[in-house]
Image (tube, rainbow, N blue to C red; front, side, top):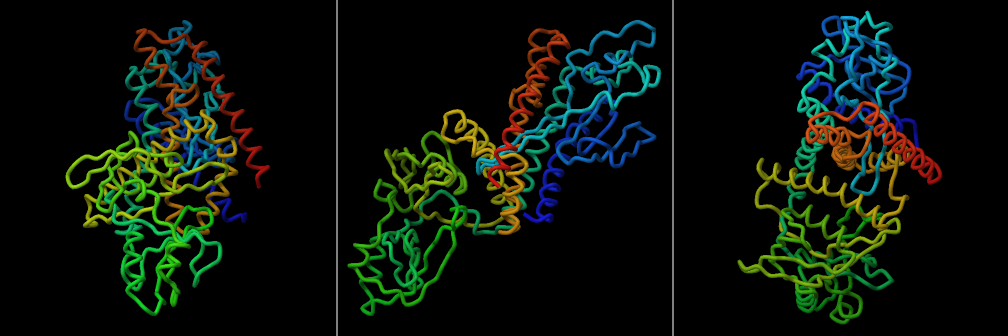
Amino acid sequence: MSILYILLAILFFGFLIFVHELGHFLVARACGVKILEFAIGMGPKIVSVKSKKSGTAYSLRLFPIGGFVSMLGENGMELAQGGSGQDGTSAPPASGADDASDRDGSDDGNRDSFFVNSAAEPAANQPPSPAAAPSPVKDPGAYCNQKLWKRMLISLAGPLMNIVLGYVLMVVLVLWAGPASVGGTQIAGFYVEYTAEEALGGIQKGDSIVGVDGADVRSMAQLRELVSAKPSGLFTVTVQRPNEDRTAVIGVTLEHVPLSPELLESSFASSLSEGSGLQVNDIVKKVNNTAVHTFNELFYEMSNQGYRPLTLTVERNGEKVVLENVIIPSYVASGVTFGNPDFQVYREASFDFPTVIKHAFWRSCSAVKMVFDSISGLLTGRYGIEAVSGPIGITEVITDAAKSSGLDVLNLLIVISINLGVMNLLPLPALDGGHILLYIIEAIRRKPLKPEIEGVINFIGLILLLGLAVIIAIKDVIAL
C-alpha cells in the first residue's frame, strides 16, 4: 500500500468528516449559537485562524481521524471550569445540551465500517477565565439556552449532510455510468451457464452465454435453436464472466467456438430462476416483502436474500403473480453466501433527467437499507467480525477501488457517506442519534435529564465505541 493511496484515504475520510461537521456548523450558526471552534482533525493544532467578526476559530489539527464543532454552552463545561453568572451567582447546569460534535461510525454496503472519535475537547476550547467570555446562562447564543427543536436540528444536521452528499454524488455516478447503468425490473432473458471444468473455445466454467453470432441469447431454448440452425458448428460467442471477487461482470467475445446440441445438453445449464417459474417479460415488483423499482434494487435484494429460496411478486400480462420458492445461483465470499441473479433485464427506454433522478434516489435508498441489513447480519451471526473494518481496512478497500476505476472510488465514497449518516442517526449513546433520543426523552418528560446522568450515558457510549474501534483496528492490522 503506497503512501499515495494512504493520502487518498486521508483525504477521503477528511472530506466526509468535513461535510458532516459543516452540517452541524451551518445549522448551529443559523440557530444563533456561538461557535467557539470548527476543527478538522484531532490533537494539536497545525493551523488556526480566528474570525474577528464571529470569534470562531477555524482549525486544522494534526491527526486526520475526526473533527468537531465546539459551541458555547454545550455540556455545561464552562460552568464545570468555574464559570459563573454575570450577577455573581452560580449558574445552573446546562439544560440537556449534549455535545453536537460527532463520534462517527459507518458500514460500506459491501460489509465494511470505520469509527471516528471526534469528541470536542472542551477544556482546550474554553477561555482561560470566566471573565473572558459570557456565562452560557446569560448568553442567548449558548447551545444550552436554545429551544429543544433547535438542538435536535443541530444534531440532525451532520448525518443528514452526509446522506444528502451521498445522493448528490449518486446522481453524478449514474450520469457518469451512462445509459447502460439504468435497467428496470422487466426480465429480458436468462443466462445459460457453462458448467464443464475444461474450457471450450475460451469459454470458462461459470461463464454465461448472452449472444451467438450477433443474436441475443435469452434462454436455453433459443440457444438450442441458434446452434441447431448452423451446420458448421463454429460460432462467435459473447459471454459474461464475473471477476475474481464477483463485484463486476466482464463481457468477452470469443471467435470460432465449437458448439453442438450434444454439448449444450452435457456442458450447459439453463437458468435456475427460469426453471423456478420466472418468465421473459415478467416485471418483478417485490423480492420477498421488499418492493423494487430498478435493476440495482432488484440485484441488491436478490444478492442479499437469494442465498435461500425467494418469493417473487411479478406483473405478468397485466396481472399480479406470486412465485414461491424461486431459486437462483449462489456464491460464497469471505465466508458469507450471496445470491447471484441469473437473468437479464431491459434498459430504461430513455436516459433523461427524470430517469437519472429516479435511479439515483432508489440506489441511495438501497445504500441506506444496506446499513440495517448489515447490522441485522452482524446480530444474527450471518456476518462475523471479519466483515467489519476500521480506517485501516477501508484504506485497503479504497486502494483496490483506486486501482480499478474512478467509478469504483466514487461508488465507495457514496456508500460510506450514506452509511456514516445513517449510523450516526442510530439511537446509541455518543452518536448524534443518541443525542436526539435524549432530546425526545426531554420532550416527553418536559424537563431535561440531569447533566450528570446525561454525561455518564454519553461517556459510557464513547468508551464502548472507542473500544470497538481499537478491536477493529487490531483485526485490520492482523489481516494486512
